[in-house]
Image (cartoon, rainbow, N blue to C red; front, side):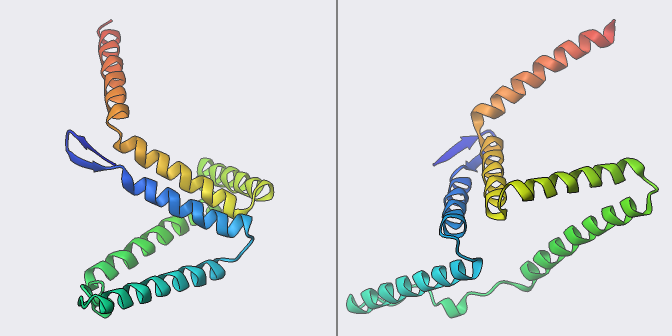
Length: 172
């Protein structure tokens, strides 16, 4: 499921895997009406049983375990990057809300009020799991469209056409 683009290899399978995982999470939380804690427990049980069966199979076939899960660690740089990304996101949201709350930027204030009102209305209409799943589907579609060679060709053709007409208007 990989396509090759001008800049090298582009993965299309990653959005598909995320969409499948999101669909399973949505099914577990919305249709079965289970909590996220129940989902996490089920995932860990399936993972533990799968690894146990795989370990017994390897032992039966006299094959050594290829990877020791106890050796899996993330580097300090990766942990720092994750923490910095989270801190930047929270800081940016706090900054926007602070500026909106002071009232100095009325346009930003009205944008924040409208977005919060729309989110509130959306929360009354649909469950949180449905909204999260719809967001995940849109994210996967966006990622797929961004990586799709056909869509890239179409957008480049459209932008070239717009640039050529824009240049004629500027000359007038």
